[in-house]
Length: 124
Image (cartoon, rainbow, N blue to C red; front, side, top):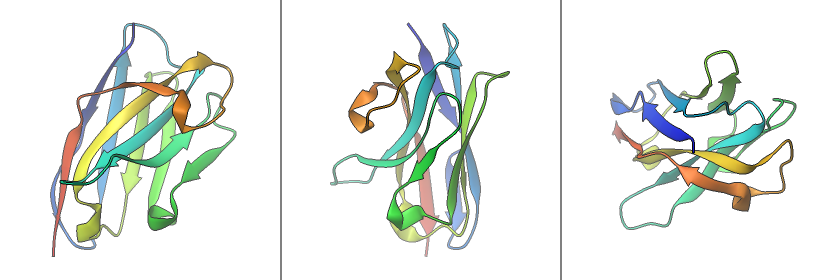
């Protein structure tokens, strides 16, 4: 079973940047799509970004498009989320997620494994 550990969250001012990292242990994630979700207080968890197992395709939700960028490093079994031009509405706990299906991607429902999350707070 894979374990996911997020890091890189923190407090930043509006307009600032953070890079979240998600290190996977237990097995290689190179054959699996990876994603990032976030959950703000009192709100449902929302799908933020994903990258396919072979990095041929990425997705970013509209509200972060052009500001957030997902990437992965197969050598280090790590996925990143570069977050630029942060806004107060980006404040949330950010979760790394791994698909349980190898070499395919059907949709956000593929993501069944989640890390513990890292807090991102953007001050106005």
